[in-house]
Image (cartoon, rainbow, N blue to C red; front, top):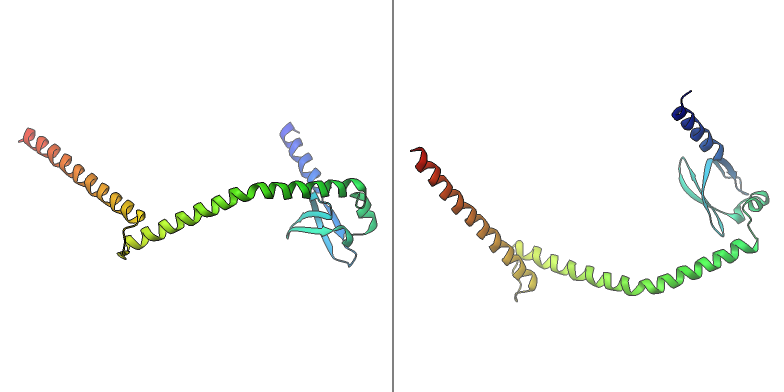
Length: 162
């Protein structure tokens, strides 16, 4: 057997070996579930039907012990993780506010620009209208310049072949 085939077989059997069946206290069964990650209050699993979270209180005692539910370490780690998340959320707020303001400004400008392009003229000239008019003028100038250059080249070629 070649080495790549052997490696593929090992990977296939390893993935099958890692799949477990989980049965909750109320009788719900999760077949061929692989553990995505363990959290302080439960486990997140992947099955054929999707991703689910099973809380430790829903699992039998032996499964709870297997994942060290109730020990001081996971709870302490979970509290520390929640504190870190809360602090990062506090620091992220100014950036989120700035991003929201920027998104609102862009949305307003795009709406103004779209209304101008559809022929709905506002009473005062907004920056969006001026920008739209500049773009239209640029395109007209570009097309006019291209037409002039094409006409001159055509005249030169016509004169040489005549």
